[in-house]
Length: 350
Image (cartoon, rainbow, N blue to C red; front, side, top):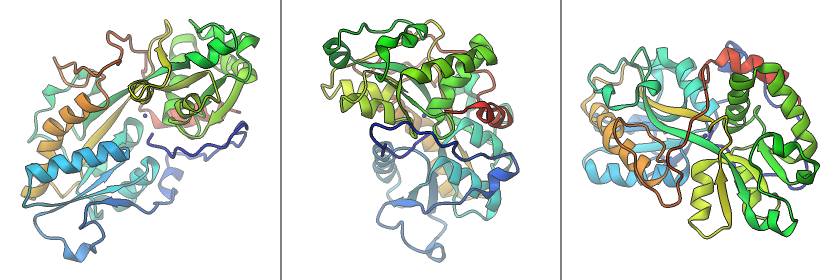
């Protein structure tokens, strides 16, 4: 889900409380240096023309590169520049800069953040939002979904088998002492994936029961990782046996031959939506209009069928080898509510 760094400290639980932000304090987050894709990316803004389109993307490297290659083929006469920028930094810059932003389009920004900065985005009446699943649409029509990203319980079957530990079938199973030191989970304070697990259980069980559960689970945790990709990485390296991770990340490793398996408990798969929009004041330019129109149709389909096939388009369910089908999604009511997120994270102490 958050497109976080993959570096994780080994054999140590993350005990820090992490950054805390309020709706007001959020805009003070530092805007980090953007990593640019494309030969023209380092040109200064003064060299931009009517045919220049600048995209701030919070997506991962391979997914960005796939989009760029396809856009270059579709629009050979446009100077399309994609800058990778971390989720929080992207939203902070949009909120501070508004229509003065260098960006024309924002891509793959997590739902809570894009909802917070939606007043910096144009209303998308020129484009057809009815192609997207209704539960993912913005009621104000200022952004479209780019992907729905689900989470799972991933297991390194070899690690559990070597220790004679059964594959878990419920969240409660993971409280058994036999899993001590074998479980890894992203920290909700630094990872959207981690927060999705927390929010899903708050919605399903109630707040107190969910926090009591994670307090108990912490006794078996090998590591609270800073990133959503951290748990699957730990499974791949054989450092853990069970990981709260991103479904598409686990499946990608399975398709490389890593002995992982993907599981869902009765509470359903936590998930989040990642959106895209046009920065206010930029949509009147033909190049921006054309590129966004491509992103919200062809671009979505390419990403959906190549990387993350969780359903996003009405009537379209792409196939990726070993990707689970018929998944029941968890109740994620309020997942884009930033104030609720900040309140819940104040309670998180691991």
